[in-house]
Length: 288
Image 1 (cartoon, rainbow, N blue to C red):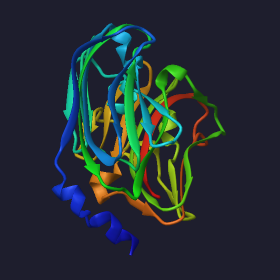
Image 2: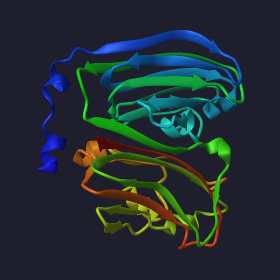
Image 3: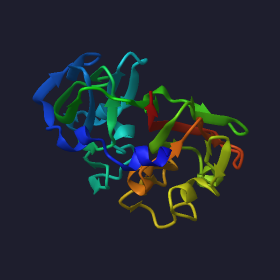
C-alpha cells in the first residue's frame, strides 16, 4: 500500500547518525554566493537553520537548492522562513518552521525533509545588501534513496502579479509522491483577494477550499490578525499594504498528502477584482 511507504520509516532513517555542515559569521558581498553544504551521495537533510544580519533588505537574499541533477531552485529567505511583512520584532516556532525577525536581522529554520538520491548542494546569495550569515544544516547519509524532494518557488523580489480572472499554477506534477508544505505571501490593494479559493487536485480529484484564509484554518479575512498553530497559520497581516504571510504544513498535519499519479496546486484570482503580488514556496516529495 502506498500509505505504508509514508508512515513506516526506513531503518536508515532511524539508525543513521546525524551529520552537520556549519558556518559562523561569514560575510557575503552583494551578488556573491557562499556554499552552505555540498555533499555527494544519497541522504536526507533534516534541518536547516540560518541567522542573517544586514540592512533591511537582507530578506531578498536567497538559497539555491541543487538536488541531484534537477534544475536548481532559488528560494528567498523571507518566503522560506515566513518573515515578509513582519510587524517589527516577531518570532514564532511551529512544528517544522520558525523564525525571529527584526528590521536588520533574521534567524529562521525549517525541518521539512529534503531527500536526495545522488547529491545535495545549497548556496546563499546576497542580493540588495551585503549580509553576514551563520548556519547549521543537519543531514543523514544513506546507501541509497528512493525519494527526492522537489521545490517550487517564486521569489518576492521578482514582483510577479496575478491579474483578476487568471490562475496561478504552483505545482503540476506527475508520478507518485506526497505534498509536504506550502508557504504563500500575498499583497494587493485590499483584502478581497482572500475570497479566492486555493485548489489541490490529487490523482484527478479536486479539493477546493472556501477562501485563502479558510485554507489556512482561519476565517473572516484573518480578523484576529496573526494566528499561528503547530502546522498552519498567518505569520503576519499588514493592513497598510494589505499583505499576508501564510503557511500550511501538511507533513506535520497528516504526514503529507499522498498522490499516486498526479498533483496540481492552483491559486485562481476569480473571486476578486484586484491584482495580487505574490511569492511562494511549495515542498513535496517524489518516489523515483
